[in-house]
Length: 332
Image (cartoon, rainbow, N blue to C red; front, side, top):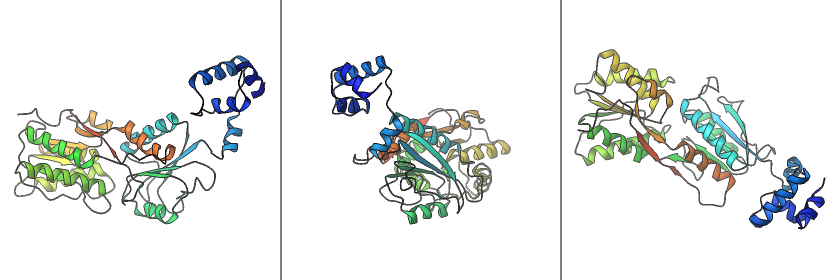
């Protein structure tokens, strides 16, 4: 069965059959439905591979997940797995298959999927502290459209959460619960631009309420949960310790909850904790972690749209929301 037979059955030209089955917007819905019905009745199927060869497109989107240097590249955070899932789903909605690669060390880095004819665009996400990977991406300057999440640099390609707005939501929630001395856990430097934006929101909310602003307490180490535990111990040992914590991400916050539990601090009755990322693991902490969650579905769509619709004004910021779970006492 050929496109000629479909065209004859549908009462249209062969070129119309090709455009209709390819999803061309130039074809009316009525004509497209008639062509699709004729193709189905005749058992006609488009040769997708041949169509891609003719169009010069692969129908594939490359997604690279950057891990920590020296680590198993597949051992990435729960946040990035959630973002990867939403990005693959958004790619499928746009008609793309996903080619996923995990990279962490020099020698593994590969970005030129478009130049090599393997993909029509590249999405990169992962830890911002692997500067070797991000610098290699910059130096390579891969062909084709590129979208990034988590990069420690600013250019026209990044997509991020509403970090400052989310931090304001977190701190306002702690203030509404009656907390007056709120500490910030998270390293704020050039390698952590998203943490820096969250610290800005933290500071903004406290200044607005006339409350003291603490210096960010650096969280050091690849294991963010363990580093969060250690940072809380240092924070509680200060002369005027806080009565609440806003952590720059959920892994740090989960470590903080563990450390507070060991000291006997009663959360949320005496001490409040809010994280950022919306990790599913926070549901199972004790108590469950109140957090700021980015809209993962929208994040995936924002990244993919830069590949599917490169000529459309891109979405740069993804909305966030406060997820109440139990690590902050009720509003007073």
